[in-house]
Length: 291
Image (cartoon, rainbow, N blue to C red; front, side, top):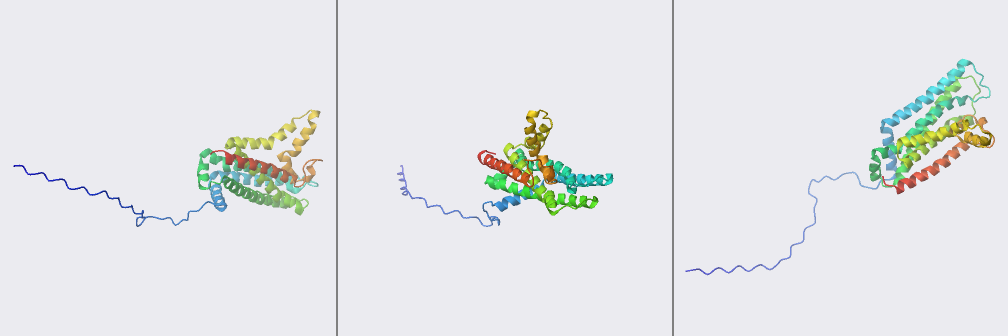
C-alpha cells in the first residue's frame, strides 16, 4: 500500500532584499594626520629648494664656481702686485672679470640641469603629479635657482673685491663701482643662468641645452674675431658690443664701451628682456607638451 506523497510546501512570496547598510570604517583603521590640500606656490618652492640642495651635482657645480672666482681673482691680484704694474686708469675690481667669466659656465650648467635633468630621469612626472600647475612648477624652479645664484655670486665677488683692494696699492673704488662689480654682476650672472633654465625647459635635454648656451656665450665673439672684410665691419662691431663677455666686462669698466653700444646698466636690461621672452616660451612649451 502506497502512502500518498506529501504536497510541496507553498513557496514564500518574493520578498524584497533589505537595503544594504552604509559602509562603516572598521575600528583601528589608520587615518593620516597630514591634511590633504592642493599644493601652493610655497610648497613648490620648498620642494625645489629641497631638490636643488640635496643633489650632488649642485654642490659640485657651485663648488667649482666658488673655486674659480676665488682662486683666479686672488691669483690675478697677486700677479699684478708682484709685477709692480701701473694700475693707474684701470679699475682695481676689473681683475675679477676673468674668474666670473669662467664661473658663468658653472651657472649655465646648473641652470640647465635644474629642469632638464628631471626630464631625462622622468622625475618631472612625479613633480607635476604633486603640483599639476606647470606654471607654478616653472616659477618655483626659477625663483629658487635665481636667488641661489645671485646670493652666491654676489657674496663671492664681494669677497674677491675685498681681497684685491687690500693686496693692490691702487685707487679705492667708488660706491658705484662696488655696486656694479658685486650686485650688478650677481644680477647679470643669475639672469644668464635663468636663461639657461628656460632653454633647458625648451630643449628638455641637458647636453643639448648646455651646448646651445655655451655657443650663445662664445660664438658671437669668435665670429667677430674672424670677420676681416670691411663690408662686415658694422656687423663685427655689433657682435663685439653685444657679446656676453663684453656686456659682463662693462660692469667692471664702463670705459670699454664704444659709441652706440651698451653702457651702464644696459647689459642687465638686455639680458632681462631676452630671458623674459625665453621664460615665456618655456611656459608655453610646458603647458602644451606632454611629459
